[in-house]
Amino acid sequence: MLSDSANPTPPNLIQADSIEAAILPPPPQVSPQASIGEALRLMNSLKECAIGTARTASSLPVPPPLDGNPSPNPSPSPRFSPYSDSTYLHLTMGCIVVVEQGVLQGILTERDIVRLACGALDLEKTAISTVMTQPVLSLTREEMTDLFVVYNLLRRHQIRHLPIVDRSGRVEGIVTLSSLRHNLSKSYFLRFRQVWEVMTSKVVTVLPTDSLAAVAQRLFTYNISCVVVVQPAPQSSAPRSQQIPVGIVTERDILQLKALELDFLKLQVQDVMSTPLAVVRATDGLEVVQEMMQVRRVRRLVVTTPDGVLVGIITETNLTKVLDPLELYGIVEILQKQVFNLTKSRNRLLASRNFDLEEAFQRQEFRLVYQPQLNLEKNRIAGAEALIRWNSKDRGPIPPAEFIPWAEQTYFIVKLGYWILRTACEQAQSWCRLGLGEITVAVNVSSHQLMDPYFVDRTVAIVRETGLPPHCLKLELTESVLVDNLSAAAEQFQRLQEASIQIAIDDFGTGYASLSYLQYFSFDILKIDRSFVHHIDQNYRNQAIVASILRLAHQLNFQVIAEGVETEAERQLLQAQGCPCIQGYGFSRPLEVDDFIQFVQHYRDSA
Ligand code: C2E
Ligand code: CA
Ligand code: CA
Image (cartoon, rainbow, N blue to C red; front, side):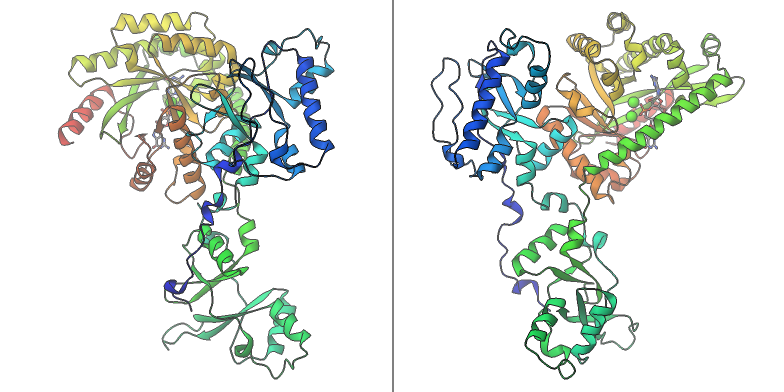
């Protein structure tokens, strides 16, 4: 067996994914005043000349000069990798960017143009500015720190093109879904996974003294491509099943020997087996496996315990079966649909139970509890989420998940919502007076509440009347709010933020649209849903997702809070990943007002 020091120094394979190579030269540029007809002709001409002549990337058409500005450097900078013609065409011809005075204004994709051309618009008379997609999500070169994050961004946005701009908004290049796929090596999907997750643990073994005929027989019988050569573990006390691997014989070895017309009955395994073995541990990361396979030029590795006992093998095929961590989003969406169906049937049930919320409200059966939120960086309580509780005189406590949907359906939530808001603001203001310091209070707002045309005015008025500094109020909205009333919500958000009230996106990552809506809104906070936090210390996919949400949030300047943190291990992992804030039973359950005050005082004294 090889010791680690005997390994040749691996080339820098993992870093082979090049961010630079994923950035293509800037697409053709047009001014917003140009007509769609012009855009169409521009796109077609580029296509024809690219198809017409064999050329390399360096001789491909340089984008036309920006309006009124000097022509860009005609020789593309060497960082753009030379794709073959067909790839280049495939990679670049998907869009044109709309630019005014050099600054990115919008984007038009080939698909948009085709759609417009098929419609009733007068193409020569319609200005591009009226139809282009605007605003465009773009990144600067500095923000493109990780291809995985960018890939994630595009997939979640369901967009294919992402312009790369400099700080003043000038287009320096473009990243497309294809250019990303092209440059994202498998290692991106491998680095969060370990060997044991995908290895084959049922291995056929032979002894060094077995004949090659026996090996050939086994390969054939079990329809496998290799056998591992073992000798029994040295200690007599060890179970018989503990075997120490010493070599490997593959199908290819057998074929080569066969071609030499050797006598398989006379040849022994130890004469022909490949050795020394390439060995990994079950807890090694898959990127280690990939690297070792590339360096050693082998297609399979033997997996052992630290004392060299055989536990399995891992092959190239095992690696290709690794699930793209982002596929998980698809799974979440399916679950989400099931939850939706469940909600519908539950609502029918609720209707039959006939909750009288109005009466309960008059009888003052509702109250708020407060769940502390911890700022990990500053080790102090950053705020609290207000959560409603209903203790029905007739039926006892009824959880919010049961009555909130009913309150929404009957629009009672609008009235209840203002009561929640006022109560929470008064409470937070009284904490300030008690000398607990500034504690921001987070209030959940359902999409039905936003349908009140006076929602913003009333909210701002409540904040003013209670005397709470407006930046101490956070409104928590779920993604569905955005999907349901996109344009109305955008305007309301803007006005709330102008009044210094913060906006948090709740249950982030579970909805349909999330990131695709980030470009339309400016948020302050993302709350990572607890489904991603649950067992995050053991779940590499969730680690990958949370890591990319954190990096993205950093790039887009959002604060992040992880919810549903229940265990110390989850908390530590999140902290190690750089998650600034947490909330969850692990830190504290939702508390009654008095308990909350005590909790804060006690925490501050002990910290
Ligand atoms: P949410 O906004 O996601 O609130 C977080 C829920 O997770 C709360 O449940 C909280 O008690 C629970 N939770 C907190 N930490 C943990 C944890 O570590 N593990 C687990 N498993 N759960 C944790 P709750 O209070 O039952 O509320 C459920 C949902 O009802 C809320 O989900 C929210 O959508 C809605 N809701 C609650 N209060 C209000 C309100 O005042 N207004 C509106 N519109 N909706 C509310
Ligand atoms: Ca919430
Ligand atoms: Ca939540």
